[in-house]
Length: 412
Image (cartoon, rainbow, N blue to C red; front, top):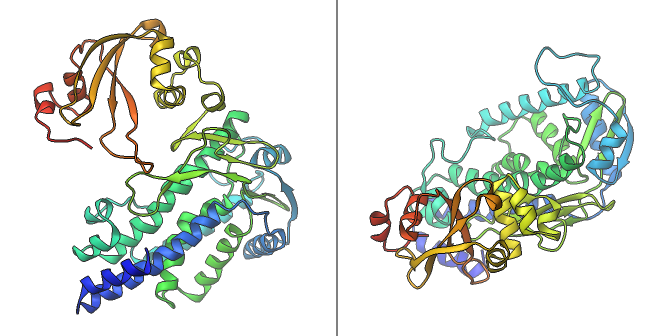
């Protein structure tokens, strides 16, 4: 937020000292969140010495000596270096398994987070809607605070959930999708280095806003995990050896339309959305992880063979709805003005079985919300084959009848 907007917000707070303090805390928290965001999106070379020192200290907490470090260009290369079977969950810990030390580190992290949660009274993995004011997710932070939302709820949604959406559900998911495409069962029990930013920021922001809140020993342990995140990419700790990857060399994101908390989503229409120096990585289309062909070669034939409806939608969007309709030779059944989106039209097309694999129809509509570039996105929705009225099909997508949808003033 600009300095001018901050001044305006403070003036609106007037003599309400408590609200003024909350606004100041939020502005500082947003700055710290953005620092963690750029840590997660960093494409700078890893700081190997810094990472090795921090990881060695984590090993020492378990009574282990400094491990041998093997550096990999990417998670794909790291899997080759590990050369171990995928993890099997369930059953008692086995000290003889390759990832026993990693299990112990995971127990350390879980215990640390429980202790920190007790100090702040806000679980680090609870979704925003659990016991929180819905204003927090539906208004800008300053407005939510002004309307009486608790600062702790604003911090949960504006810091933790924002970073989870951008990093864990975005960049990290894209990297993992590319890894799984190459290695269907990659070895488990790894940490994500720079992509662990969401949970670390959740606790780091609070201790910076309120120093002394955590026990000194927990502060020191949190520092070690933060050091690793700020200095390298994904890493696999094993007995006597640790495989660590470089950071991503490519991390393409875009702002999430309509977001209030700085959320971004992975997207690159010309190559990997998240990639590494060895050429491996993953692709994404406006926030959805997709196979490489969606970005580099979407065709009607490939779209017809794709079973994942979200991947199919992304491929059609990249190809372009006009091109897809023409190449797939879809038949227009009916069109009508969109009652929920004045000035736009609804178009209902028949989807032949050989195109979609089952009887269905597609409703082509225009998004009610404006994207960041000022345009409205054209999109298609699969609807049941028995619907032959575009307005009824639009209503079905909202759980309404055609008559109910026709009475909408405007949808979003």
